[in-house]
Length: 139
Ligand SMILES: [Fe+2]
Ligand SMILES: [Fe+2]
Image (cartoon, rainbow, N blue to C red):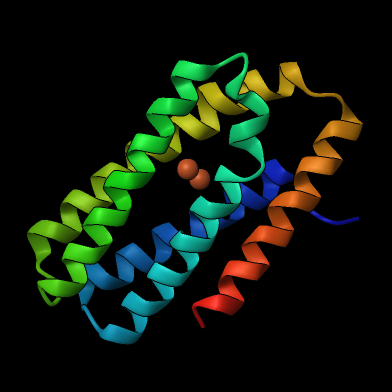
């Protein structure tokens, strides 16, 4: 059976953390490109699956999460412009760490209460579709 949305999101979080660690020991453009691709796809997929499904009941939590995605996008852009500056990389790492903790903690626990198995499968499929589509687009 395919991964559900929670497992898939967690797996991508671990991949992103690995890439951030690699970049902090030595910055190179191809690792940056992989990080950028994987984060852009990940964020878009969340924004088109889990977030809209929760928005009605958890609008504050989701609005905050969307703002954090915007911050991550800005920092990704700056990191590239500034050629991998460690200060920008550490801001990006911190922003992602805090965001990931909230998703895997409070957000997932709310989502598990809100959705039944059928809905989770639907959202998992949607997440996967968007994730794959964006990865193809920015390859
Ligand atoms: Fe997110
Ligand atoms: Fe996430």
